[in-house]
Length: 62
Image (cartoon, rainbow, N blue to C red):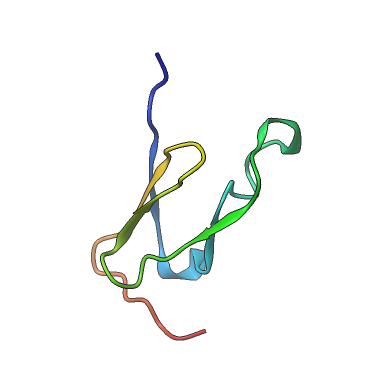
């Protein structure tokens, strides 16, 4: 049984992609960009990791 991770990110981490740069290349899946602008959270379709924008952070235009 796998454990789903939840990672809190800040606006400076955007644009957000999974896997992040902290994940070892050999254990990663294809990179997918995730949109937090509408709801403040997103789930990776490959690994199920949940990403959540930190409280009080605002998404700006890039």
